[in-house]
Length: 297
Image (tube, rainbow, N blue to C red):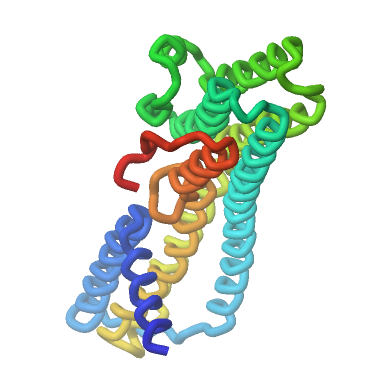
């Protein structure tokens, strides 16, 4: 019970380290200031008498909730699709390594090292490609000439995938491995995963839709004090802040998770998944891990 409670508070602490939540808190404070000014003016200079129209509030609240449900579902679908793609990449990388391990002779150390380095390099290259921030130090273990070549190409994951298949084809021709038709489905899956991730990254939710919801929420929250201030006075301030936190928070979290490949605390842990691939394929191919592609992770 105590551990569950501690985990709950740890989750709350991590939740508020998100850049989106930090921006949200600033906006909530802004609405709180707006409510305070309005309450002060009504209490001292411009008294108004507006009855709380519960039907109007219920109607607007229902419409807003439907919009937010659709918004969050759409955003989470993108997040979950990205997670499934990377989960599939982990599985196909392992399967690729297992196939190669079964085909190569035990004393063929050079080719084992080659495939271990390049299969894991594909994951790190894909991560950097999706973040528009390629860290070539994470490809450590590849030849300096090859890394220098990657510095000058437009699409690093494509080049790494191409290198993998070419090496497999060369080994098949040299009779060092059997038919590569057992390998090809896993290689094709890696390319499909690359395309799926690019589709998520390059097809954002239309800006006009997100903008419309922001305007709706802002208008709704700005109207609330006029319906509450006459009856609740200064208690309108926490009420409007809570409403802003709840409604804008949902919208901002949706905006954050719809781009799942970034570096925010709520984005996918691509570093951890890429490292999992690195460790697994090296272990499968019986290649010693002499370096850490994610120092300090």
